[in-house]
Length: 173
Image 1 (cartoon, rainbow, N blue to C red):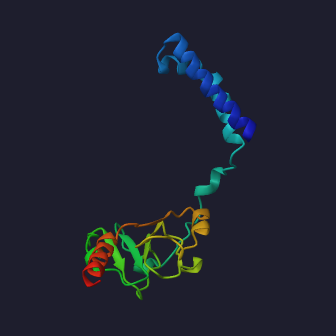
Image 2: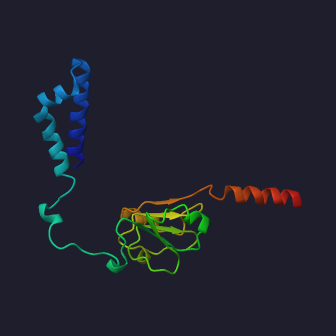
């Protein structure tokens, strides 16, 4: 695969060099050199992944709870008590917020604070995990990355509270 990708990269570099030296438009060059560009690209793709033609046909697998599914709404599962003021920013006609304790088998996203998240608690429908606060030490980031689920945090979200605490400490001290 490395050789194929390297060959493809070299073909692209050569294309750019030829375009720069001839001054021809990109579409004219690509049309006239279509076969020369296509072959390295096909070789590079061939070495990367095997895809079956029939992969999208047959029975659809249902994940989650179909009876609890709301089409057109994003379902967000909260694992800790999240401020109602923060959750109110999600429009109720677009988001279905599930507080801690309510089942959310079709969750598209997870919001948590200090809850120690386990892989078993993450439904197959989850597309993102957000930690309300700094750090992601309570989320198995490596495993979520393997599953293709982005994990992010909100550093600085509590900056005002920290400033208020420092000023209070200065006034009392």
